[in-house]
Length: 250
Image (cartoon, rainbow, N blue to C red; front, side, top):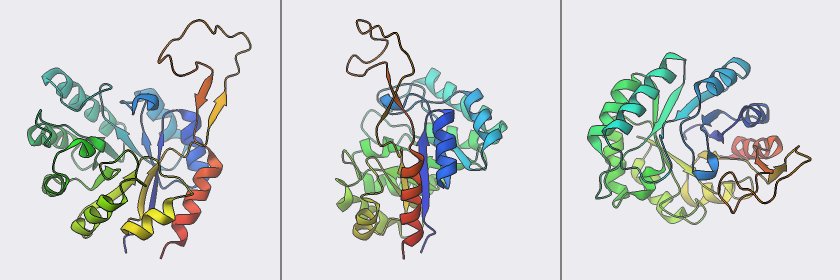
């Protein structure tokens, strides 16, 4: 059996360090988790690479929204890959689609050429494709090492039926990594239903209250549905619980 692996998605220095202390095998580093993640800063990557010994894969996503990228956005992503490769990233997490919902093989090849020998994960653009079984084979032929997916559902627990089919089709040729809604309370059930042993989680059990004493409640700096004073952070204890369950898988 493939060795179990826990990847924690982190968007800050504090979260990255909490994931490292809790026993994560790898970090997926990004920014703006509240909108699904975008490319993180070089400075944040350098801080975490300096201070923790966990491998770091970096999300390459220039903006919120769909995965249909124009030439300028593709150029931006390629340059970002160059920078993180030069700084010592373990891998990059990428994806690009055509207007018809297929994997954009030309753009994927361009990014992968820039990545060189870095590990490549196809991110959840996979979940927005019209034919996941064909996309799996295309990702494999491109040289992707893993596919991050919820089974084309709102969460991995909801997508277990397709996750199981994908894992059986992959047959060890490419790693199927279950992500979205993954928690210590459902990892075992997902594994038992699908056979998957590689998991991606934020390990966030709630929000942390801001240290601000003065609070301007009448102004919102971002999404109006979210408070400026609720901070997202990885929970070290939840990471440890997830890691402990993975160690017990047979």
